[in-house]
Length: 473
Ligand code: GLU
Image (cartoon, rainbow, N blue to C red; front, side):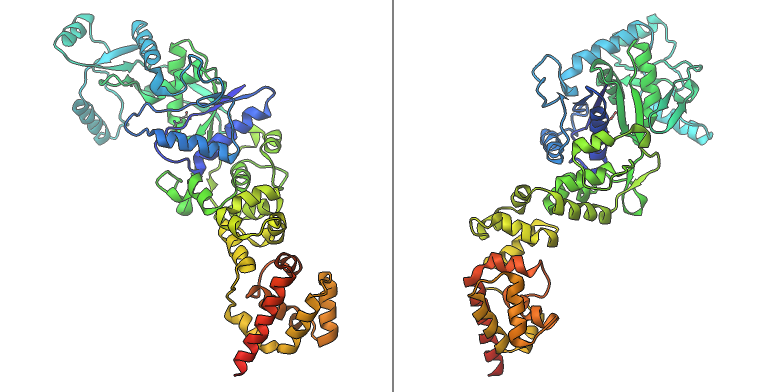
């Protein structure tokens, strides 16, 4: 079993493409000895950008989707090129086989003629099909037109009676009629091979057995089946994934840059969150926990892929982000928090810091806020916090400051304040939180206090007394 992902490097990877890559990778991984291959489809030289190609590879690895064969994999360096730009000779060879065997013929119709024909067909309420003008030119005419310098395209001959069909892995049986397809161009007059021709030839020559791809390619499939048959190549099993729709029911696209993997990564989404979110977009898993790639692969079943469109839902993604933040290893979260946080958290407290705040943040900038709040020499207290502090009185803080130096366990510490001041409930812990952190919401106070350390905590509590006294003046 060999699956593949074949991106065109004309933009960043968006969620829809990433899901296609992931499903192919999971599908291969779920099978004993399955291989997932990556091919770069850069036949469109104008729109293909090397920087996008590199970004796609990087983003896939970041997501945790790795391939065993193809571009950038270890077997690279063998004679096989995994970019279409490097396979031109090969395509030319197979195109000429088709022509030699009578499956394709030179077509001299100009783009203007073809546009006219199509317009006329549409006006008559018929679907546009090639009219067959050059289908049966005799050899003499072809030769004289070539001699005159006319440059033909190469057109594939589709028999009216042809019935290309297949059992779609996702959508079930699909049937097409040759008459509806019409003869189609496989090599443009400029010599460039048609994209779907290269795509089909590559799959065959690279031994791809299963193809999961976007529904937008479904109309290519019957033509590709006819081509593969004419070339005597085996056809892979195809499965067409429903499109991923964005807000308003429109398909997600590269133009909507905000759902590129890169943009989500920059916003601070964890790859584990995106991986789990994508895996559930159109595939049912019984386990709703955060799963690793291998766990997802073990549970992946092609017959569980839905044929109904999937919708991008930021709230679901947020759910997985929250789950990832509670599940992912501390050192991974520490790295994710970034340089700013690294520079602020004192050495030795890194993992304690991660543990203390992981349940209360969603993005790295919030970690930075907490690092600032806890470790900066001067801390801003918000209005709510000031109000609580002023309302509480110096006695409370005096007691707290004195008890802090005893370095009690947090519960015992609170108990002693309660004993000494008679405060309970909110009145017991809110002034402490306001005084120590400058705000009223946040992670559990005990671990925060431990992070602050006695010295810093005492200083902050003393600040509160000054603030109260200043307020009186
Ligand atoms: N290069 C095509 C795309 O990016 C993929 C076609 C296919 O998967 O067969 O849409």
